[in-house]
Length: 143
Image 1 (cartoon, rainbow, N blue to C red):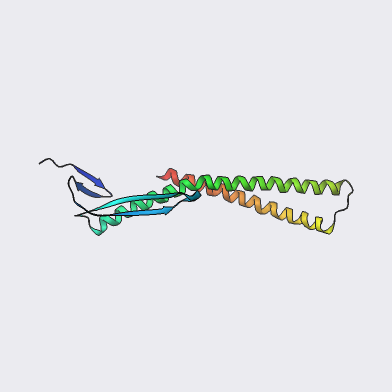
Image 2: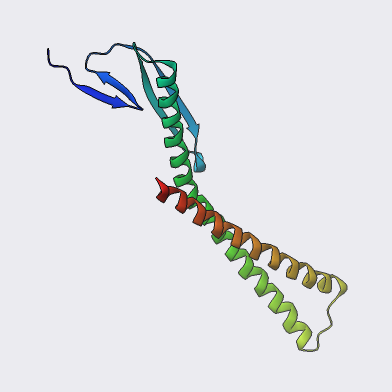
């Protein structure tokens, strides 16, 4: 009798092994996507074998989630860059008014202070976003 063997998550399987069940792991991904992975439980699977297989599939899902998050992180970062540019443009308009001898209202003066604070916050957000993208890419290259 010629039997072929294969290995899945550390478990040796022989052609013809009976499956006694299956499992499905489903996860919500960024941008409304869903990922589903499935595995089988074989007649001679031990609890440790099943846990290794489930852990392996969880690792697959985690990697795919990280991969899917990168474009979302890039979009968020790009939106913050655009927002930063718009705030700077508005700040320039107010500064020119003041430089040309125009008198700023108290609301406009407050707005300048708030814009400067927002610029710093957005710059921090952009830096954090770039770091998150780098970290996600680095996590993908580890595998």
